[in-house]
Length: 476
Image (tube, rainbow, N blue to C red; front, side, top):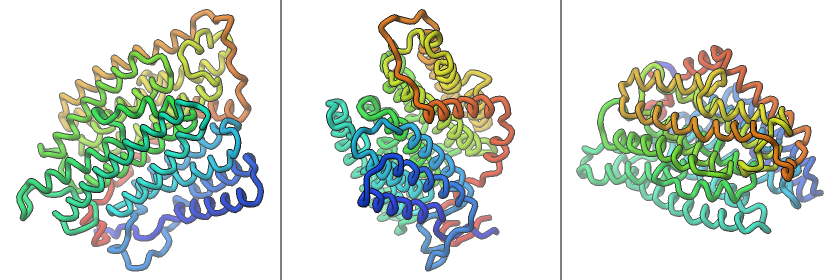
């Protein structure tokens, strides 16, 4: 038996301090440059603190709402780096009162970190609502654009509905288990199977709404199209990483290798997401809507990894999260750099802006799972996990979805290789954006050619601790 880490992760008070400092800076004098410096310094300092010991938490392990274990450290690192990339992407693109934009980004990042480390229903819900309320302001940031208002209203209504469903499921789970700790309700409880089954279904439905998994996905394309490009990247990357981390923690103590209510529901949604997300992206002419469909499909791939317990399951999911976050952030950074979201505007980009077009092609190739980009190894890793767990149906859906994805990803590359139209003149890319795009493209290729370091790191991860182990502070 080894003791589980107990205490408060240092990155959380650092983020809280950075948020307070940024509020003081706004109250003193508005400055976008100062806000970006404070936000970046806070995120990088929080990232550097991930390997520091946890701060003391009164009451011992039984009172711990958050678990700063290896799973949290890895997920928090992805969240903080992705948020830092979003801050750079937003430079000179947020209009007036831009410093408040970065304040909301930090608040959303704080909520995502709380979700990633939560081992308790209260912590999960508080983190989720902190993230959701921050996103509401970020989505509606460009108040003069009708699409922003429409996207914010849709997000407000459906986010509130999904939160209510999730809260009702958590309440039923508490009624069944008598504990606020994460524990999937057992269908053979003292009151019969009805309440535990309802609790599991409602909790999964609420989380699937937030993850925008099929059939709870209809809000995502409209919201991402209406939101500013950096906010769309934040939704597609940071919120998805945090939600999947919380989902994996919630079902850490469940046996997903054998048939059951949760296993069946997860498998159905995984198949629907892999096929539905790719089919949704297939007919899109707007890049942000296309990447929304792509994001839905990638949720299905991650659910396949979650449903493949064994030596490769969690490791493949962790690796895939890293590959997905790099490529998706890079694709949105390229859209932001060119200030073009319609595929028609990218025609002839290899002739007009070859460096930007090459970087965009690298991101798309990675998302499609084509070597030598990191997405190829990430998808192969998940296939290995699915084969080891004998998830034949899910693997068939992954293959079919990947074939569909090849068409729309490579269709964008084909459009960039066409002759350049005379009436399209993409905006000049700012140096900060160009540096971000170049760095992400290099990492995408380097991690695909030399994946050993990331593989070792993901294989060394212990799975999220089940609720019983968290409660008693030790793990076998």
